[in-house]
Image 1 (cartoon, rainbow, N blue to C red):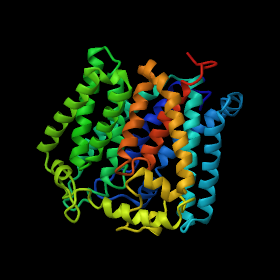
Image 2: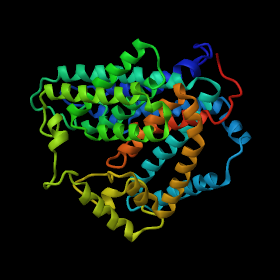
Image 3: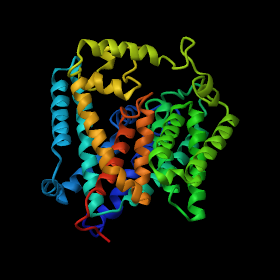
Length: 411
């Protein structure tokens, strides 16, 4: 297939495949009445997203990623932190209370890690950062249009709006995807000068906020607002009115539009994002979840229990993730793993920030998307579920590609 494409697969096909993978998942799990068993399996394993990650890794290996990694010098502290983290992740997966779940989740985590390295390599030698940003946004626009069409096709009054939505096990999980894409729009708008492009990004942001609030996802707003606030503090480009002002106006208009559409389920709609409570507390059960998780962490504080073990060691109404990334890491990999993640995060930001500030068009949008997902992850599973973690890894890879002067790049 690569030969038939004239050797341009890395330049055109891979960014498009990555950007459109969620849309393909939407099509494959499209079921206005009820998903089939095959569709359930596709959704359970997020087959198109995983397939694209594996394909990207294979192409990067073919394009000399291993040799390129060997030629680069790696700082000792972050390298040691990464190696130790991988050892902890694999070790805890072997001895986890629920080893099957832990091993699957650890496989996905390692896959995302390799995927991020692969995107970094291919972005340095074959395609441009902006290629992937544009592919993500076009794929998301198609996803959003398909979602609206799907809504119009649902005629069954008993349709399960919460768990029957295509491409998502829970409809509010779409909020992770939306937050990352809106952040891409904001980052791209910050350096854009063409009026028609700015207009298109604004319309997409308005539609995105409207859809997110219609699903009942208030976390989308938290993620985007968090990214903008951090951006205002550390990124000069975000201080331009077209960035923060456009984000604020699109949120206001999106909220106004969301209020116009009736919610098909009690846990959906604009009103839910404002009034939702569990046991009369606005965190909708998070404080109880966090207390349970902290109790489990105290029993195994150093190395944790392994990936995806909350349902076993800190059960709460069948919920499988801690709704907080700090507790998520502590529960999975303990204080030692948390220290490794902290070292890697600080090193990544320190290494990336100068390039992001100077190369806005290509690196600012993915950096904003990472900020949005990280902000969202403080109150939900934005760095737990597969699609947002895949996006986070790809964005990290794009940014890391700017750390070194590329040796060659296809025209």
